[in-house]
Image 1 (tube, rainbow, N blue to C red):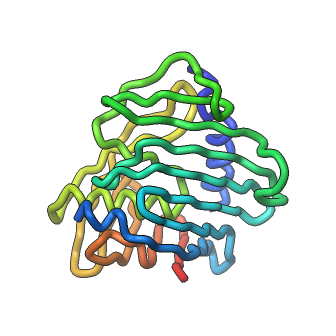
Image 2: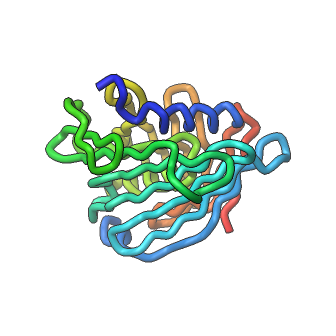
Image 3: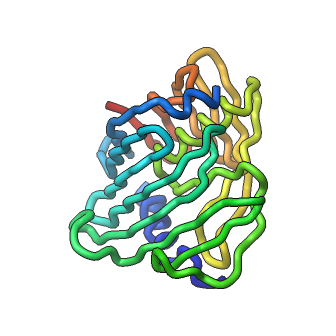
Length: 213
């Protein structure tokens, strides 16, 4: 299990250093821009259609992550595929490809895609994968929280990394047109809508702003 999502996780660490259920089926697309200290450090384009979410997260002068997710009606994710490319963008062969499938409270892995990796790990039922700092991942947590219902919701998450990744929780608190997502001591302040779409966000501790267009 030690090799699970390792290169993808390394790319995610580079990024961080630079820095109602039926509605789940609604189509949507756009681009997020991540701005830190007044400088754009990354963009993420996304397309949501039916039970599919595809994203491309490109960090300036660093890695590009391309993801494809199969969505469940309750805003959880059945399967997530990740391809990691170099600074040139999503062209040619990826540096690494991997996948995780969630079923029956367990996560099973492939690395590379199509090659089953021995061993899996236990995860909380309904766990949502979180690829920091992907705005689309943040939005999926919001959508899951909306599907669960309530003004204060705890969403189980799975974070890719060595030895099968890490399981944790995100505490979501909704206000009028806003939501705060807390990952332990780290807080993300967002504006959102009734579906759970991420409209904008800021991470005060990192001087990071996320804009959507």
